Length: 237
Image (cartoon, rainbow, N blue to C red; front, top):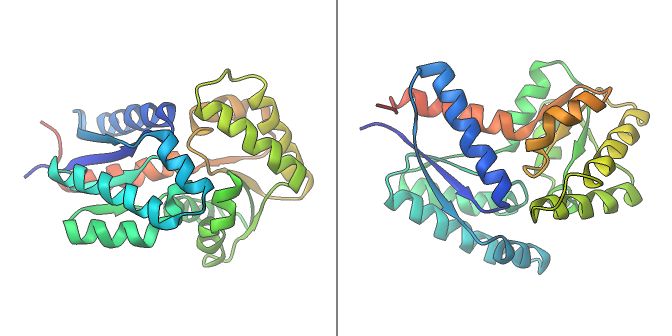
């Protein structure tokens, strides 16, 4: 039975499209064919309201709904095309295991890439909710890597910029805010910066062209890890 990649999307829509295109591109580059992919899109507003209200239980419920939908469609490998919903990672993982779906985290592959490159101090570009959840910091710490985030005033502007991008707003001036955050991290003496926000990932190439710091795109490492597992299951025509 060929493997099928399931994507929990909608968080936001542009990131979902980015994930789909990236999965197809990476799979074709490796296998020469196209993967089987199913997408379960959670309304952005529902997830954002759940996160803002601090309801981890509601986030977990939305992810469970999506995982059951993906499993019903035959997904064997799955990923969440967003960072913040990983606050309910343990609950989602338990649900996926019960359904027989291999759920791939976003933070472990990214931290592993930082270790592979030999970095010891990594700045994180993410929403405040993702930073407060601490899963990137924990994954990096287990590998002996220190996590650094922008100062409070810069982080507040970064949150606003990310929200505008998630809602489909224009790239400018939000990306100018991100570049400023990168400059702040550089001044703080980090070895590299990690793009830990799927709404920033579609702009990674543009950001790399304006940043002096080397960048790790967590979304790219996430999809690479999922596609690698999928390849082992023999997906494709």
